[in-house]
Length: 431
Image (cartoon, rainbow, N blue to C red; front, side, top):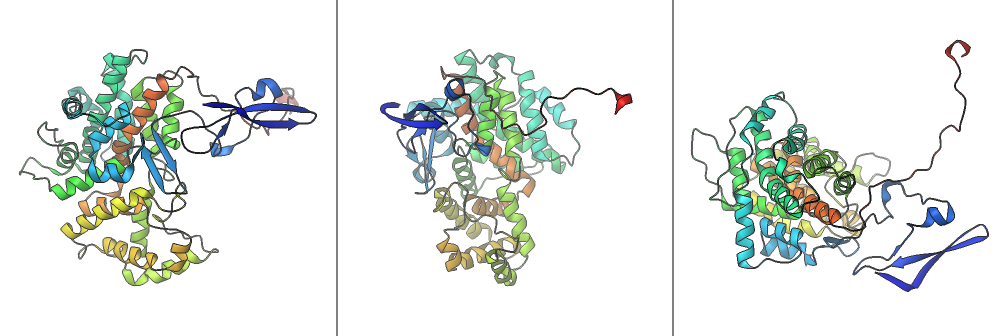
């Protein structure tokens, strides 16, 4: 809220302007510049919006210096260790831990919406077999508004609720179908008698020719991947969803926009980039060479999966993800997988090297999630679609919060114009 005793004074030439300062429940104060243009005729300049609060929110808080990530106040490590993904979805959507009856009702509603409209099958068949699963997801999710007309009116709170449940429920089905289509296998329909993560693994790896039993260790690891990627405050894809939402676009179009943004290698592709780096290294004996290159400031090579733009100490999600990675590798082994052998040895050598520990370049969540997904048998092309399944709840929670905000305005960033000033058109014969 605004603290009337705290203001910032901006002086431009001979004029001074008092700007209110707002304090949140945590994090740095913010200077309110909403009236700056009207009063002073100037904009602020902040490429990437790295020093700009675009909204106020009660959903997720990150303290990068402390290595802290809170969802509605609950630490991410506690949620990942003690809770499960659908309960975390409830927390993000509604603000508090559910009672047993509330959780049962929520899980039932999600479970009973996991099937997609049968006509949507034809959408998949319109893509080439070698289409990237993310390309398919962007198109199919955007097309959901053509099938679910009864949940596109954003002014109706009930329709917003129905759209939210549908997307949480159907996103794993869509991602699994995109995967099955890309490898030429028949679609596997969801089941109502198994949990969310197990259902996703079954839809990805089961075939009609034989029964498929989901290993509980793999299911738990998948659930943690979903949980640890559920929301991450105002990142690029979340901001994309909010910006699209500000125009009044339907919820399916907004989430499709978020998926498109997540597809970028600088955002959702980090764990894929990490696995590609491990494959480039090739064998454990080459690790010292690549560590030396990473230390050389004149060498463009960087160790992917170490450090984080937001977390300046450690990634709080990585500790829990490392535990899952160890459990999965103990179950499946690394002996026959050179990529996983390199990953284990690289982790060991980097954590023993003062260069990385002094600079706090610890393995992050992307390093461990990529190892887990590789061990499970997912191709790297599926890493970002799985990220999209995880992050859907974060996008939806941010979308719902924004739509209900009485201060909602269509997003309209400003610019510092550096182009030509006004000039007259010259007829073509005179040029």
